[in-house]
Every structure is written in structure tokens, then in C-alpha cells.
Length: 349
Image 1: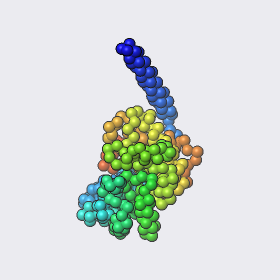
Image 2 (image 1 turned 90 degrees about the vertical axis):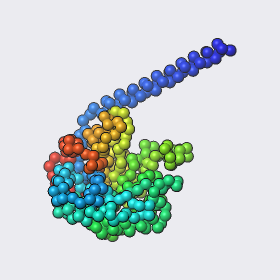
Image 3 (image 1 turned 120 degrees about the horizontal axis):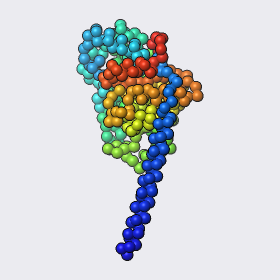
Image 4 (image 1 turned 45 degrees about the vertical axis):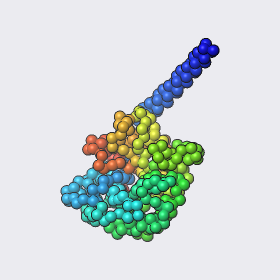
């Protein structure tokens, strides 16, 4: 009996060793293939339509004219056409206390003086209530109405648009779509813009029902709120701009990270690039895998993705830099080396 169990154990260990070797070999092939793919220098240059997420202090605290001039100079040098100034977050009832944006009017007036070609958006969002967890319940019509009244307040202050960042947003979120419809009515009636930040799209739409069935939507382990192709098209048909939060990759090598940015750039532009302006989000903050996920890697990946398009999209596109408060001068210098086209003036989307 003991010998039989020993033989079973030996066979099990042998199979485990073969399985481990196979997995390691497959991983090595993937890494090698990604490395070879990554070596080609991108041909595509960047664009003159780009966005920047900006810190809350711009609307919440006073600034001198020299600070506003410096901001305007940075935007012009880096071909930033749209700035999402953090102006929230929303309270649970859909409002934003005026004390949080007491400097907003001064900011807007300074932007009109020093950066008249740059659009200033009120960047508003909150943690969406999902399955009883979260802060703001967009399923409540009264909350949505107060969100719209808050949007109108920011437009009255002079913002050029409303930029939503509610998280998480799942592709079956009809309350969010209703809010998008109503907000579009508001912004278009005022001649302003509606933009939205969304998570990176799914790698495989067909896997979403499996995730939904097997993994909860809340808790430390939950299925990711990735937009499906259908959902992304629906959002694009309602928004003037869609910014894809392509960062937080957590891949171990530059080549795999670059492939991630290239893949999402190509897929997103092919899917909605003819419908709306698209910004591919690129990071400048420090990540746990900071040797792999850097601004130069992200920009190179975006350019490789543009190279792989059969044709350019009909609508403008560019990158969205996240964020102004984490971008060092040397990163802006590198950005200017590899992204904006040489010469030319800032153009609108």
C-alpha cells in the first residue's frame, strides 16, 4: 500500500513539474514575442489635441497671476487643448459645496486671459453605489436631478464643459446612460461639451457574463467594470470626448506594458474614433511597477497603436496626461520630444 501511494505521489510530482515547465516555457515565449514586437520604432507622431487632468487646488485655492501665466505656458508648450480641473467630488446628494470651488471664477477668467484656446472642464465624479456599496446613488432620480443642477452651476461659472468620472460604471448601468442623456441636453443647450472618463475596455466581451455570474461586483475581489464594445459606442454617441483610463497596467515589463497601450489605442480608435474625440490616458504618477509603466513607455505604446490603424479616425484624438500634480519637468520635456508634432499651433477638437 505504501509503495502504491509513493508511486502515485511520484507521478503527481512529475506531472506538476511538466505543467510548471510548460507554463514557464509559454511565459518565456510571450515575453520574447513582446520584446521582439517592442523593438520597432514607432512611425506615428502625436497630435495637437490633448488633455490634462488638473488638481483641485486650481478651483479651491487662490493663485497669483504669475501662477496662471505659468500654467498657460505649460499648456501651450505641450499642446494641451482640454484641461479637466477637479471641481468635486459630488456629495452623496448630488451637490458640491460652494466652498470647494470658491476660486473657480478667478480660474476661468485667468484661463480666458492667458490660455483662450484651451477649454476648461469641471471635472466631477464620485464612487458610484453598486450593490449597496458606494457614495452616490445614480439610480435615484432625485440625485440625478441635483447632479444636473450642480453641472449647470459650473457652466454658469464659465466652464467649457462637464467631465464625469463616476466609478465603477458597469456596461449594464442604465442610470448612468440616463444621466449622460440629460447632461448632453444641458451642455448642448449651452453650447458646451460633455466628456467622460471610462475604464479601459474589455479584452473579451464574451467573458463579462462569466465574471458577473461567478464574481461579485463589490468587495476586495470583484469583477472589473470594463466597458464592452456596445456600451462604449453608446457612451461615445452621447459624449463629445471620451477619455480612457488606460493606466494602472501592473504588467512586469516595458514591452508588455507598451503592448497594452498599443492594443487599447488601436481598439478604441477603431471602435469609436469616428464618433467622438478620444483621449488615451497616460500616467506620470509612480506605480508599484514603475520600471515598466512610465510616461515614455505609454507614449511609445500609443504611437505603436496608431501605426497599426488601417486609417486615421475621422474625429480628433490624443492623449490625456494623468496628472498635472505628478508630472515632473523632465517628463514634460520627454513628452515634447516624442508626442506633439513639430511646429504648428494648438488646434481645437
